[in-house]
Length: 370
Image 1 (cartoon, helix red, strand yellow):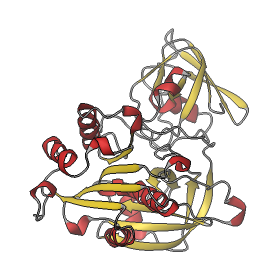
Image 2 (cartoon, one colour):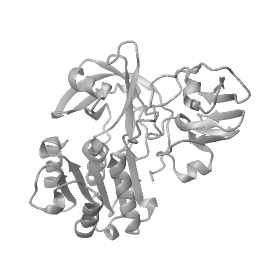
Image 3 (cartoon, helix red, strand yellow):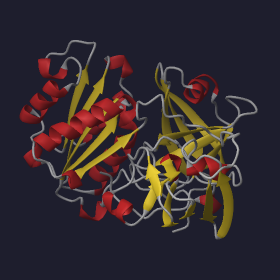
Image 4 (tube, helix red, strand yellow):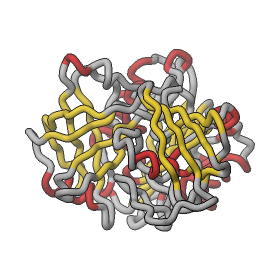
């Protein structure tokens, strides 16, 4: 699960890149300057993310990608880490061409991969992360340990080799600073370590050993899981077998690992004849209600249809992961294909991910403002 926090309306503003720092051969840290008049818009909780938008990577075609904020809350700037993905157009462009002085459209911070900092004192937090899954964890570790005197944090961080470890020096500094409160365990899949438990792929058997010998579940108050879909699902299942209360397990996915689920940046056209199966979608956004007809509801999502008439409809990943396109169904009914972002209580209250929702009634009304 994720932690429910107050959700702000997702809006884009243009920010200037103030610094770009190389983390590894395939990743960078990008600092974005936040002007005084926008500081309230970019107030955030540790663990949240922002969506970046640009047409520089593909001239004439907008791209959006979401990246976690990797620093503890700091007025006046945001820092995100961008790791080059195989075939990733945005991440490749950013790693090769992004430089100080450039401008990017940046969405206000979103996400619920966080915790109640008011109750953090004295708790033991544990994280299992892989690759770029470390980025929101950096903000959580820095904030929780820096804001408490007795909270402890255990981090199991998996990478291929030591050269692939993002924030390697920063993690070492945190280990030195919080020697008795921060336990750091690097797992390397393609590099032999002294401990066999920390060498090799982080699979179910290895997780069982780690939970037995390094991070006993009964000592942990809250868990944070972040990384590829397969790893996060394996961790969730292993924690469930260990009897961990799912309400204490927070998880975040960067992708679903489902290439068959398209994630566009604009509405894909639907050129079909309107027939008896057509559905009419009414949606309220910023106090204004718009209508759009879906010729064949099973072909496209509500988000896709809404974007045809309102390009300002909020979304980031379009893959059922981030929750930015969340809206409440007030009339009619829908079917969701995937959901990796909404809590059970949100589903019970009628909220859906519009990027994954298809009407099952001829008329559907959703509210993005609720």
